[in-house]
Length: 487
Image 1: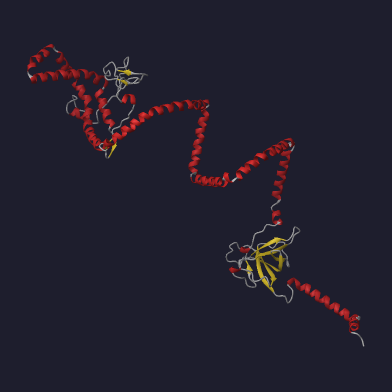
Image 2: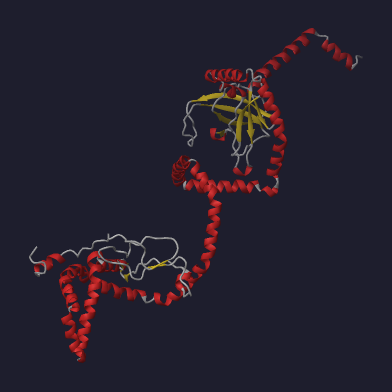
């Protein structure tokens, strides 16, 4: 009886049977290698479509990976003329990749993303899938990832494409210029390197200081950002300030050494100003006390100003007639003066001395004559009454609906404001200014240092302001026959 092992060996000793089996194995291997490009038969897959803007260097059967694991392959690459995505407004041509993934991978979340990456420096690309959040839903078998799900990736060939002819020419020019710039400057580079080495120590200390928490560099940057944001809102005004500032600095530059001399004198000036302000403190305190004392009277000023405005308004036309009236009264005043000095008139008044009425009348004429005799030269030569009336009216000419304002500029000096046993050392006062045809002292006195009480020495100017009557007054006077005719 033959053994079982001997029987099996006899089967393989048959050359026809062995050749037939070999041919069958080769045919199955060739078939499987042929159809493997489209997936292994009888192996279930999870199919997904992916839209890419460019399928350059991406071939059929290119691997598909999730992380570092290969989970499938690219079975088809189909060009598309327009986007099928309704949200894609570009309508640019693209390629649709048909992916066959392992059944265990699917289904992918709807918010999954993908990118086409370079497989190696030698070329070849693969598709990398980044699964999303399962809570977003799942993609059915045959679903599509649109262009909006693509993750942009810059590979080496895309980067190298930037070095076109223009870029190459520019690089050549830059390298040539750098060569020309560095030629013969070895010593300078050595010095720069040495100086840089010397700088590293202080630079390290500076960076350590900036990195310290106590420096609060973050706060400084935030403050600088807030400052620049605030300056951005006033950029036009800031530009105007800088433009005007350039003009100012140009003027300061043109001043030359004068500005430096002024700055050199500032310490002394500041010292004097400090002394003056210190000495002025009592005066300012007194002025404050006066202002406090004037507060009760301030409530009465509107009513008083209204009444004073009414008086001035009514009296202004009358005052404007005074110069013409004074000229008309000049002969009468002269006659009264002659009467007052006439011996016969004096005797007549003496005879009337026992009568009270006569005594009063005589005294009136004599006194009026003396007043007019003294006032006539001042009026005729210096226009005293006309200027006084004009200035008085002008001092209360400003105001509003509540009344007029009395304009005044007070010069307060403590030594002159309060009573003292002796006049101030800088007191200037002229109780009886000379007002005649030789000089008009009032308003024309020159200022001299020190104390001056009484009339200043020498004759002063006779030039004074001319006043004119209001509009229409001369015409009315002419119609009334005061000017000897009609206009």
